[in-house]
Length: 252
Length: 257
Image (cartoon, rainbow over all chains, first blue to last red; front, top):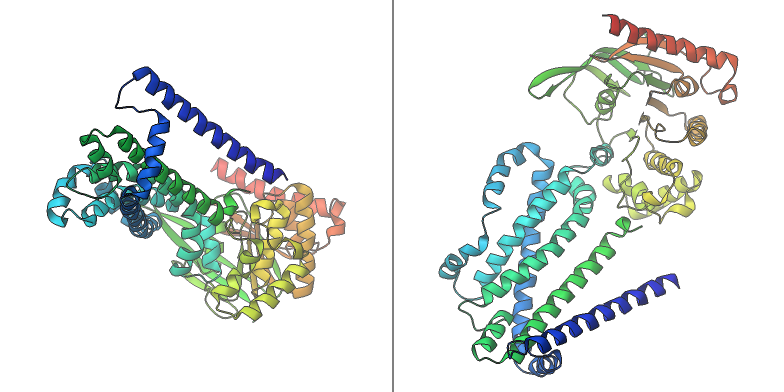
């Protein structure tokens, strides 16, 4: 009962937020009175119409790029982060390299990736993966480093080897931090995706938005913005639910 | 010559701290009979935990001779370790924590289930299997830690300040509980504490340690061990103050030196 109330409370506040957001948009459109900011109703209508057209194809392409990038970044960043977190000596040697390259905005390498990897999906995926990878690597390493040593000695005393420590201590112990860094990384990934898709490509929401802009079809442009926003929102919800499902022990 | 179950001869442990060599333990000698309860007491930083880590097979950088049942210490063997906090994995339920050792030993599922059910039932934890450690009281958590150790049917039980973060009543309850378990299993137990009453209650042999480097300063045979009904009685308190004067005297010596 309480659970259900809490749930419906969440839905109500979500609905409330959507209404405020739409009202704000509508007011802004009214005040600005510019074709570049169409009122929400027209944009929403256009969004639904475009979904039946080519918007869904662009949406699919963008979703594919983001999902593959996030997964690749996690597959590479998590094991390496744990490895560094549990080996202080190795970490001391590798850390300077990470700190040197971490603050460099990786987006500036986009032209190079385009030349080396072509204008297809790969250059975009590599770019997003690289950026998210750093966030996951650093977060996972710090989480692994800060795990209580007692967990490690107790599993070792039970006869656990390094594979068991990985499986029973480091991975589950770091998982909440990993999922948090994925949620934060998602925002970055969407921003980089947009940038990557506005360059030398004919596919993806970024292209759809910029293409609409160049045709001065502002309602369609906003349809693209809505699509991108919703995609980010649903990916965020999925990560949130995954965290609740896998890290139940954090939310007691 | 007597055959001891646990025997330690001229144990020395060095480690490096910020490039400087530090001697954690030096010339440590003692032994325990099969089924004997030993208690190590001493100030913090006297190398008690280093000693435990050697015995648990987690630290092989030592010199001297350490034999447990005639063999050098090894992790995952016949020695079980119980820590003060952080022994149970917070992301595993009580059940998964208890069966972890058996899983790591590659026992088959049926065997694991029977063994875990038996132990949890015996320790009065049968209904808590699905809970996470954070959902238990401190006393319940240490019972689970004991269950996880017992399910492996160890020959030696090492306990590193197992009850020190518990409130006084829960601590007494668990001390009695440990004595009951010992009566039943006659396990060899080595327990570390900084609580003098706990040492007198549990230790048939009390080993007083002094720090820098950690050494056994005095061995006391304690005839009051296990007599929980004597808690607070004159002879119990006398034994406590005897130990206290030893620990104090040592501290005094160190201060004047």
